[in-house]
Image 1 (cartoon, rainbow, N blue to C red):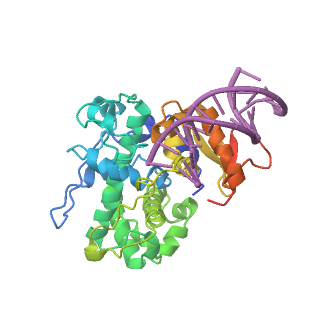
Image 2: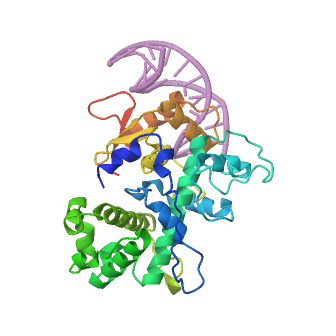
Image 3: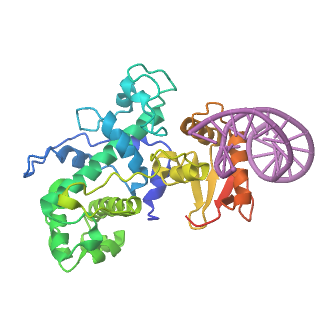
Length: 330
DNA sequence: TAAAAGGAAACCG
DNA sequence: CGGTTTCCTTTTA
């Protein structure tokens, strides 16, 4: 999890990071049940490093499902999202249930921030990734979670990966390995087995692992995948209609460093210590979520301080400005 | 000068 | 009623 790539994800300017490969080569895969073309998304993933699916939180995939445009191909230019005004009506911080204002008229032009559209784009891509993993699983008849794979499954997955990334056959080197072994491998381990393609393989596996981890984390009450459909249930943490608590909201932001590490991030995740890097922005997001346009850090911090008594959040031992700590481990 | 700390009261689902 | 939100004063770094 603490891969060196993480720093990359944190370096603020994301747009470059998400640049899709110019060549959108089409890999034709026979998907039995006439399922839609999944290929171009995968080609895009070659350059899209997702060390962990922190950028993915199910609530966003849910609302995204509604707002999505007909063309499934995620277009990487930041302008695209902001170019479509209809999208501005739905913000990630807002639950989809809020249809308060007339649907057609964008009553609240709260600023189609370009970060917002970036987020939307990211979640859009991620949604595709999840779908693609699901499709791949059906195609290959393997489970989404790499840990569960036997040696045969691993080989299938490798074949699939080679296919997607146009790699030569690398399966042999991994012949003895089952899913657990594979998941335990570091980047260096990959390098030993396949010096040339360790990066791609490891990254691709990372995506699957992250997706599986996410899946496990978000769907506590698992429906046993009846009928094979809904392999990725739209479990919903925050958009359940219940009032969101500030501490939950902060944790949500912290769980999506890909989107929000510029505003708030862990200093020590194990101890639950986090730092608000941009107090104004965090307050803005909170105000947005609670529909309190006048929210600011002064008020937000007052709310945080209310948690001191309740033992939800406290000031860390070495008190620093804008640094707080969740009392019970995350 | 921004942030921290809390009291007090209003607000709201 | 609980969980803030709003406003305010004082203290601290």
